[in-house]
Length: 586
Image (cartoon, helix red, strand yellow):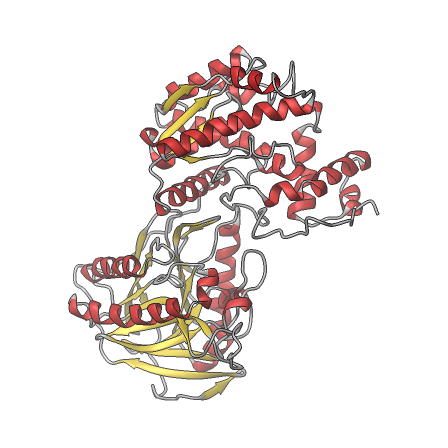
């Protein structure tokens, strides 16, 4: 049986950076070639970054992607890498955008893969299954392909597929079996969700069995706006055997020698039909010879535990949002509470302490322990710590306005927001907001106050998970002989906004251990009132919580973006009308 040395390039592209992404492909192809690779794979739309969203509708961008692909093929050959076949994802089109007046049925923008060899594009494949759920809107952007591309590489028939093709039965993987391929390549831009890694391996095994072939799955890493990609690339044989698996959240070159069945039929069966799809065949007539020095055997890296995985996702999401948007640093308010402490620790892990400014903004209601806890966190992490008392500014407002109750509480929060934004304007920092998903769900925040900011690292993190993450991060630091970054006082004390005397979150909200399960069922699970009550939740508490969630939609619509880690994040995933009279209690 022939052996192919596969190189799965788990890399971090940037949307719109065609030149930078092409250089990324060239650098990692060189690494793969130096390690004796015979077929190199890159993620979905690596050349343009993913997702490109409405850039698809700009014909100039589509043309630039097509030109960048041709240039990349030529540049790889000029680099002395032309003999090594390389699979890259990119944006293509064979007709006008579907939203234009000159749109043509069955033609338009394409989510595409290409095989580059000897300075040429020798084969193309257009994604067949287009996801249109959750964060995906691919039916809005792309036209599905109706052909499976099979490329003969080193005597092995290799089928090309893209991401969602893997997540649905039938289609390309069923056709691959009919076409008699030995290897199915699937290139991916599959966003992270907690526990998705537990689903991915069984899914790849099902598709390998469906195709009757080995599957090489390569996924990108890094982040794009709210989305973060964890990699977790792998190679799985037709019988379900896991041959190699890459680590999560790091760029990585997964090399592995795979024994594959030799191709049987002719390499030029263009146009043959299988299960309603055409099979289009091509051939790479030569690949580099197998490298000496023994076989390449990729590691099998086990996925991380939940808290470690989520922490890595949040760090990656924050780092790439800051760096790819070229912010020099970040600033956030340090209250001494658990949320700001966790965000500060994430920021230091993502960017280093020299790029993080933490500002204590005490009022007359700020407790001594909260001020001390904020200072303690700053010492533990080494971030730039400042103190800006807000009471003189609050008093100036109150001397000119007649306010009482909640209006005074919100005034304090808004003064804090003004100070943070002023520091952002003056010094160039990105303001991080620190509200967790539980607070966003029930509207427990002040618009233009504690909600102010350009990015929210814990926007998709339930309050109970915030506590778990803090405990895990401290324990992980202790295990490594480092100083735990988060003060134990911040973890253990009752949560409070400290905007009025003796205030606690529990004055307004149910206990978070009661609140979060209701919110998870309603927001993430789309359960109605009846389903929540059947699940055992108190009907009166359910009614109270659902009213808060439903009436806070206008606040969420104005909230900062933040890293998605759950099955249904606010924003891309959950889209509800602000003006909406439907209520679950009828």
